[in-house]
Image (tube, rainbow, N blue to C red):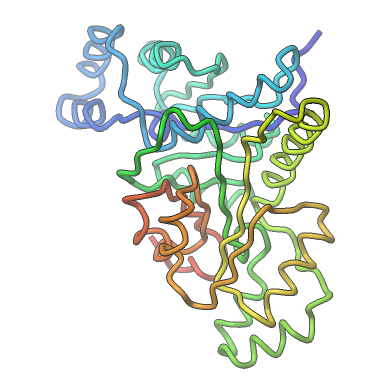
Length: 310
């Protein structure tokens, strides 16, 4: 019987996001492909250090213990390595105790084309060009930005935070703001507060996370001592009255968040430093850069906010 992906949260993660490939990439650039092959073979049993996205991925796959006989989460490694040089990546996965056994290696070629075929709700990469190409093709992809954030290994919780416009929702409201200014935007959003926006690239990811939360709620109903581990927040520059349209959109889509921060221009980093999400998705990198000492930031280079960006 085939291994089905329909009832799972499937995440694709590039080796560049999962592990620290600084040394390997430098060696490749300096010495070329053949020497790189020999270097990786010689270091096959030297584990790669954890990368920026590792804490998020690690905590995500740990949620599989909620349905151990039928995993809720499937993490698939996507790599530009070929199968030979990719051996070190998979041995590093095993060394670090990460429950991930599936991988795609596409020698020198961007692997994003397989996102749709494998029903992925998210593709994470440290390669901006790959992310741009994936989003251009309509896939849910994010650029993992360099971060020095450190997390308490003894803390079992997984905290995920989303921006709204251009991330969970499409960018139509953001286009209104860009073209007509703040005052007209606020009037427009208030007048359309009961009209849901079209879902954005990461709305399916939120829906998949909500399914896991529902299972956690069932577990807590059976066992009052069980403490849910997954918590989701909305962190947006919207404020009243524009906040109502965001709330109504989430409700209409059938998804929810635990916490919502309607900041109206207050620097998001102020909240993120306290929350310390293991991952925060935003369509504008300027909202991420101020918090990268404390959180893992993922830029979703989608929509009008990124038109003309590199």
